[in-house]
Image (tube, rainbow, N blue to C red; front, side):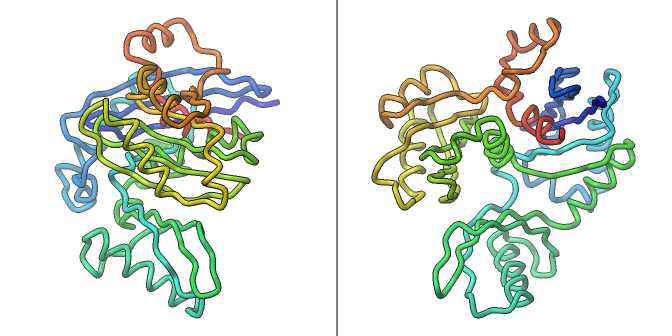
Length: 308
């Protein structure tokens, strides 16, 4: 079997987090795991202005090239990951009587309005049904300005990289968990992200997705309460039976927080470690020990998802 490589790059707060993974005969090896501090905070609405600001665009391209060229890179493909706080993520009800063209027009209007973009802004929209009834479908929507998607695609092409996806950290983790733990598809489980100033949650039962939520967090002591509140707001057909499993990720997914969640939710709580079954060279492992492997959760998951 041939050797394949893929890069996962997370645009985090004032930094890029870069993981390159090699796969051969279903064996994965971590070739690189770097963090590059950036002067500008691209994990903010500043990113939306970059396609129209030459100086900021130049700074972004320079920073991306710096992390890309720091060491030898073998991959020719890359997946980009954005923080959940940056794209527009919302649930939109769509009337079933509308035609497909009318539904797309409504989604465009909803996204520009809710995202506070100018009405003429063209949006790249991904949607997923979370609740269906006779009158309407409730769609989970993720949207970015098309100009930003075009800029990121062209920038990667400039670095001779094929941009295979632009995703957000929470959904990257949900997707990699479905790949790593397929037996959970029939369980009542949830995925939660714990970050410096916000947390996120997605809930599943019997193979059905019940939606996504996000909330701000001020103190570490508030994480368990916010997670419980988010999960209670994601209604499922068997929600009253409680969760069987909770997976947590993110730089704040520390043992003390996970222990508190386990006590409150009365279910198994596990920190997801995407690279658990990968070969990690000693030099990279030392970096994990110093800075914490959990800061690479999203970028490592994106790299894994880009492999066959």
